[in-house]
Structures are given as C-alpha cells and as structure tokens.
Length: 160
Image (tube, rainbow, N blue to C red; front, side, top):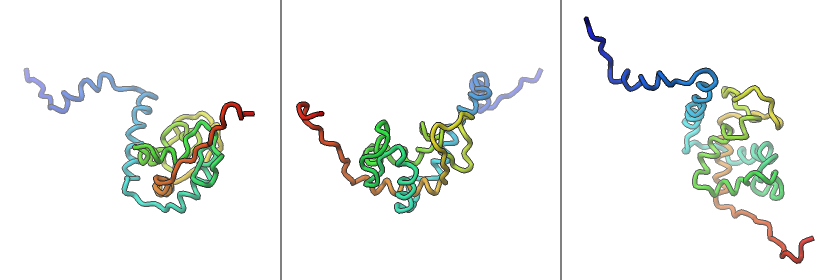
C-alpha cells in the first residue's frame, strides 16, 4: 500500500485546520488583517496636507476631541485631546489606524471598508478617505511640539 506523502507546510497547517473559526468568528479574526492592509496603504512616510487635515479634524473630530487651538474648551471630556495623543510614543500608529479603533467604526465610514456590525450608529455618521487619514496624520505631526494646556485648579477654599 502506497503511503501518502505530506509536505512540511501541510503538517504545520494541520493543527490550524482543526481549530479554524467559523462564521462570525472567522470574520472577526480577519479584522486585524484588513486593518494591517490599510496600515500598509498609509505608511508612516506617507505625506498628506496638514492644512487639509486640520480642516477635517476641526469639522469631524472636534465633536469629541479637543483639536489644537480650534476648540480648547471643547471635546466630551472622556476623550483625549489631539495634543495629548500626539505625545504618546505610538501616536502615529494610533492616528493612522484610528478609523478601526473603538468607537470610530460605529460612525466613521471609509469607502471600501465594510461595517463591523449592523447595529445603528450612535453618533452622526461621516465618511472620509484614506488620503484624508494621511492629511489628519500630517496635521497631528504639527501638534507634536505644541504644549498641552492644562486647566489651573483653584485652591479648595476658593471653589464655588
């Protein structure tokens, strides 16, 4: 009886075939790969227009975030300001992939990127392109050196 030969690659894939996710789990497991593809489409060296990025951020992002000098007392309080995020060591990755990070997929649309769920958006939806993501990143790079404005605290006995 002839013995079936298996390649090295088949042996490596055998455990994966047994535990491969099904249905929704498979779709969810593909999300990091899709994000990775878009991250490659928007490399760290990509150039965008800082001026266009500022306009996009002021129009859409300032609903929740403090964006530069545009709305220094704005934002919703539970979100970091653009300046604060720009001080983080991984800020470029955060801004290059923000559209795939919670809560943005619930209301932000990028042409060609499928919705993560059929649940309704809890904020007004808007759409931008990957080129506009590069514009936002270019704008954020201008915020790296901008100081973070902090509110001065009143002494305890002077509070109303």
